[in-house]
Length: 188
Image 1: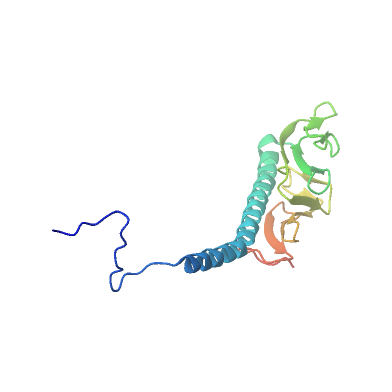
Image 2: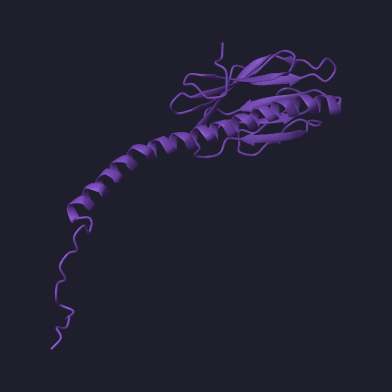
């Protein structure tokens, strides 16, 4: 009679067969979790820096746009910064320095003849702040100059800052202050 294998019979382990024990599996999962817990903050920091870079590029682009619009419209263009910190916004407009504002959440001009060209508010909950050493900059269409020259800072909570330095000539350059931002020179 031939021996039959039943479903409950244990087969002997083949020589050289490999596998993981439950203890080895638990140690591996624990090590993986520990490594992942170290990587998550780095990913968060990387996302915040990407957000900072994106907003800094929008600001730099808008500074160039204000200069070109002044030449195109044959009219002075004003950059006005309203609000403070994470509630800050800016508006590009024609007219006098204080004619338009965006601090109420919507860009508004209060003087006749003033027109909004563009406005931008920081994204809510992005952890970014906008500050400047001037409230308004006037891009003059005749000479192509900016008065007054100034600096605009976009910063993260940890102090990482990208600064847009606007020269009297109207040209803007980017640099970093505080923690290093790759690809940008340090502000002097």
